[in-house]
Length: 413
Image 1 (cartoon, rainbow, N blue to C red):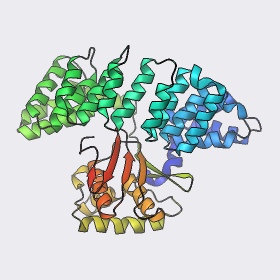
Image 2: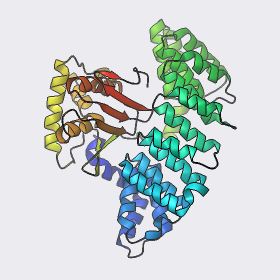
Image 3: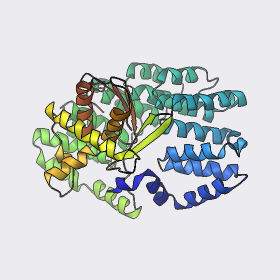
Image 4: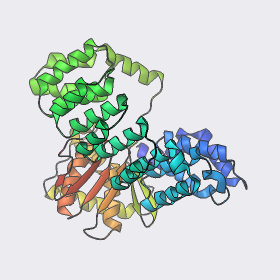
């Protein structure tokens, strides 16, 4: 599996030129600030924020001016938020931004500050940074909107939305998505109807809201409207439509969804642009370090211990009623191999590491770069019950707070 190569190997394969520059910078007595910032930004774009932070930590003692510009400081703040670094690291960057004056004068830095605290799960500090901004543009407001939506605090997001002097499509889509994730279909539709120049995300969020609420007829009606508007669907749209079709037994529509020319165009784009599947990564902070895992990862120094705990954890979950969702594994392998594949997902490895290293009943905090799969979500609810632990998991879509066998998302995510 790709995961066995580890995050560092994946970074090398994905960014060979940046890795070469990285190596030269580390050997240089006076690292070039412009090149360093460029490599940090490249890592961010490749969803490798840990590499960005490691480069920063290695170069800063020899290149004190590395954070002397608003651009480089905003890149560092973005990396800090995306890597789920300890809040203390972000606070140090915040203090630097205040001393330099960038926090007040530069909207890029202010926006990065709000986003950093939001991704760290400190929406209170994100709101403080937002309220302290002398000026606010649509980008800063959108970050604050997304911060509230990620925690399912849609009422607070709506207050920000209603107070925005200007809105763009991202603003409207964030609110549609927020209401859709909470199952508040009526409010989602209200925002959807008020949205001009809708894109695939707008339609997908609304169709998904109907499908998840078992309002399959409305989902399919909206699908046909989307088709008539010549909007090319994304994967979320197709999954929602197929779900609605299965609920209604509308196999003809399901076949139409699968054969629609928009789907063919998506497949052509994937082949033409050589789009690669992004591997799932889960990270957890322990002993002042970020520990990152990928599916099937065996490169961690304590790998043997982690897999021992993982075996024990999966046994306890099965005794408590857990049933692996092997239907999610789209590989031609036997059932036992499918169960093993699910058990070795990155978030389960991170949880096993947490159970190995943290005190009993303490809160487990994990960051996932992709949406948590249904099997892991189901397992984490049981883990919170069986181990009497609270789990706070930030995936690509939102924060999940697991406690006593329940999740704050109410299974909408």
